[in-house]
Length: 167
Image (cartoon, rainbow, N blue to C red; front, side, top):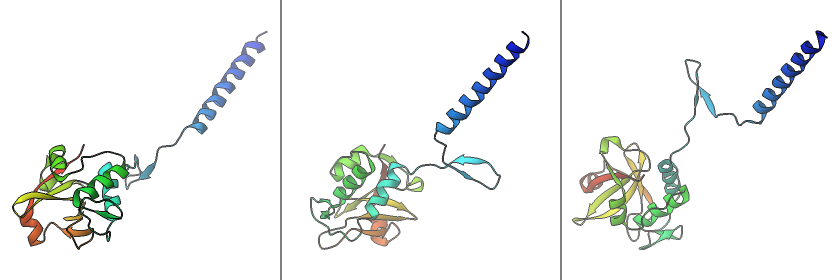
């Protein structure tokens, strides 16, 4: 009679072990990378801004088209709207609406995907998307194509008004 409770305990222990193994096999492992200290940390996924910037960068060479918001042709705010939409969020269509929607960010705190607003001919009328390393992607003007420019160029350095972050 004493052997029967021991057998029940053994069966119960085996069942718990099997259930633990089954549940471990069905879980999705975290994406990890190791660092020099041997720890394992989660690898951060790209932010929406980074994804939008990647999409905008892929449009380099597409012609400028006033009112354009597709790979057939972009104006500056159309490029931003298209890129963010493909990254998963809806944003306003015009440069002025983007200005209002974006939370101001200091130039020293820029992140990939932040918006850069410029004064052209004395008024805020141009937007680009920050890529990092003082570079940005934008649809500059009629007769040109989507391109990458430097914030450090004399023209854009002087025309820069402020940066903004969506979300």
